[in-house]
Length: 370
Image (cartoon, rainbow, N blue to C red; front, side, top):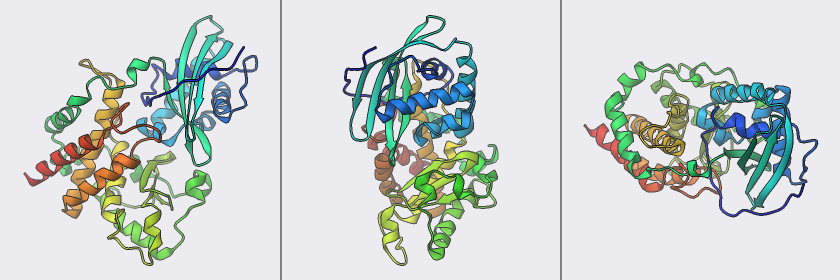
């Protein structure tokens, strides 16, 4: 089989649920008879499929980007992979595998493959891989490119505001009392040896700085009902960021600029109040899941609405704790920059644009005033 071709332009599709995941991934389990590419991204896909074929779900998880895993939650993602692994055994392996297109830029690689399984069914699957540190990670899987862009992004903010009214979310303390506690509240003590390299090898080793960061984030944890902060994993990253790890842990960094001062100065752009917003967004990501599309919407529409819900909730937390609406203006800029995967333009493929983030923060400001 030949391995050639190129494809320009790509997408992100975070709706990796049982409808897509088993069909697309099943094609990569047994590639001994297929064309083996020397490029690392193709090897990542092959190794992921081999792990699923063995039933090694924990190993398979390591080949996906943290953004993609975080979209549905670690435990939900594991369940999808386990189902995929079971269905893989029912499809009779791979009869043929062909790379139709491949294009690679510095931080993003796109693959289009044709898969013929043992039961003679043929599927074309599109994969996107992104760089996390020095490693390629699977960041998107899709069978139908039409699902990659929201059908109705123009009504997303209004839909989120209607959700807020319907669920009584504006009274956030009352709303939280009706919700199950997020997994971070029951997270185990951190074992740094089990953390991703970018977190494990970049510990916040200054006790005073660690104490300052922990104390700054504690109000958010108490707000959602957590009695301890051991679920927060601090690290020195390049940009302000928060992301979920196994067991409910959340890794968070205020960005490289924070560590340049001695002691750190909260007046810098990535201040501690803004960091509280990033932590709140990630905690609510453990509580707010992607809904099933309805009313003429697709999966990308639902992803967009979920992201805007997280921003609204985090905005209310910030207003309640810090009581400073201007913090949301600064945070909106950084969410637009760092709250989406690399290579995905703002406002495309389910990622909210700056205007949508600002509008949903505006709704939070209005609700807080009233």
